[in-house]
Length: 252
Ligand code: NAD
Image 1 (cartoon, helix red, strand yellow):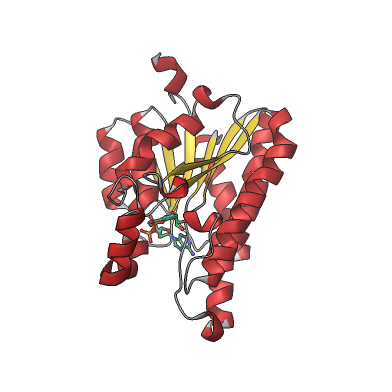
Image 2 (cartoon, helix red, strand yellow):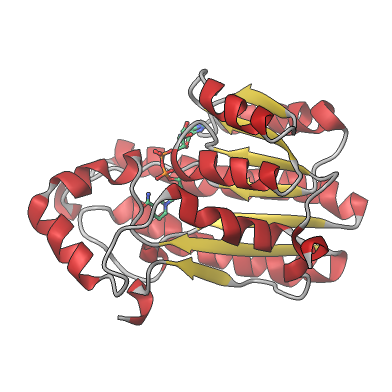
């Protein structure tokens, strides 16, 4: 049974691995046997490194700004150089900006679309080319409940996360026959920096919590199993799927 989920000998690139969901998924993949290349904008990934080293796996960190188109090629080359191959890509890095739709600035729009969408497209295309040459690969994009719903005061975030569904399906259609599984995870409401403002708005926090069938917000720990599943042989015949990890939110 263990073999289905083993990632022994695999190399995974995880973006946004310094904190939150990305950090937890990187540790989960390492626990399943993968060495990790973690990309984040913050220089300090010591906590992630410490936890991964405890698993006996290797951790390589790359500090880069994914919003800059010009940095993508060197990020990809640096990542490949670390271990000579990449088997798994988790496109997790993301930002959110909040403002009323009528006041939402061009700058906030561009910042969010650049990180949440443009960098995912470019990294997937470039690392995907490397995977195509290897004849195998697993790509996991991080979507959101706002892949399906409109949300409030987050038009750029919602647009970017709707687009993640389209990107996942379109790349999957072209690459499933080349040995590459492209899927997405849509986390529900999880306790991280990204949702701090939402949790501090008492009214919205209570409303959201009351709408979650499981009755509680998720934690970064809750994504470990799903990311290992989509990165492993257990998901060999799963393509273009968006797996909701949401305490039942989408069914309520
Ligand atoms: P977070 O703010 O805790 O972490 C974001 C990570 O992305 C950090 O490691 C940061 O360094 C990295 N990052 C941000 N901008 C970057 C850039 N320009 N270049 C390189 N790295 C950059 O957020 P989180 O809650 O862990 O969210 C991770 C992903 O999950 C995001 O895509 C987010 O949209 C998605 N998500 C989160 C929730 C939630 O409830 N927290 C729900 C659904 C989806």
